[in-house]
Image (cartoon, rainbow, N blue to C red; front, side, top):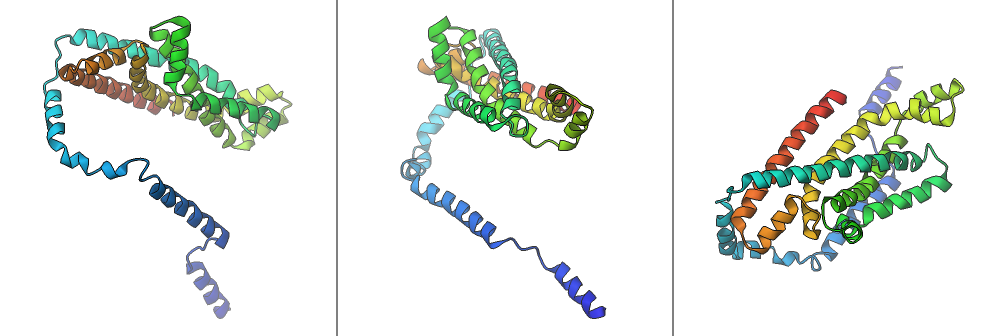
Length: 271
């Protein structure tokens, strides 16, 4: 008995070992990533990294302009930032309405493959097309202005949230769903009472995070005339008014920080 016990204890002290197949897979995966980094070194022009230090004088001259932000029209900048936040808010809200059905229909444990696979490809398309391209399409359709930015964010974010929502649905506990099914509930009732309560907190967290991201992304949409502070930012860059660019950057940083704090408060109350 003592020999058996000692052998058992020694076996328990051995570190866990992974199967050879998993070790080879990990080796191939990480080795492949390293090889890709080496291959892409030239095309990504990583050899220019030393120029960051060689041209430091130019960077210092450029940076001096940013040390003197021009807040002479701060009320206008704040109003344009508020418009940008409203664009992000509406874009995220519409995206959630798009993502909820996509997330449910794209989950393997909710819908059959002949529905799930086409929905997945649709979400791939929505995520793949840059929001600048989508925004340009809407600018052509409805003209310049914030609405084009709202729709660009809505479609692109809808694809992103749809994927995240579907992955959250696929990771749920089957117990509550089976319990609802045992009561004789219809499939829609299984989703409403067995699936939604489990994923609602995570969905809320994803939506809040995308709202933060969209508040930054909406500034880029100013490049195509979608309104907001982004349009003022690019006009200032084109006119080499770096002091005004610095003021705009500070306004954006403050706004995004406030949105992040608000999102943290909401998540803490809901999750």
